[in-house]
Length: 92
Image (cartoon, rainbow, N blue to C red; front, side, top):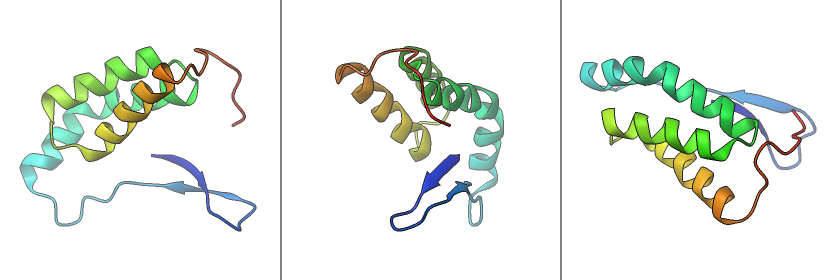
């Protein structure tokens, strides 16, 4: 899902989504939307929030219960509404 920096830590760590306990149907939906979700993450991290919003909306159409896509959709919209500049330089 990306890199995060925990409070009090100097190094970032990768976070991943776990499918343990997930139904076969939900796993199928995740696999079906994976490339679109990844495109949304790429756009979000590169501050192309409108493109990220569209990608996460596409994921939500296929899998309305995808809470991770919902999280990034909300944050994309918040960045658009909050005036974060599209395509601004980002430290990775």
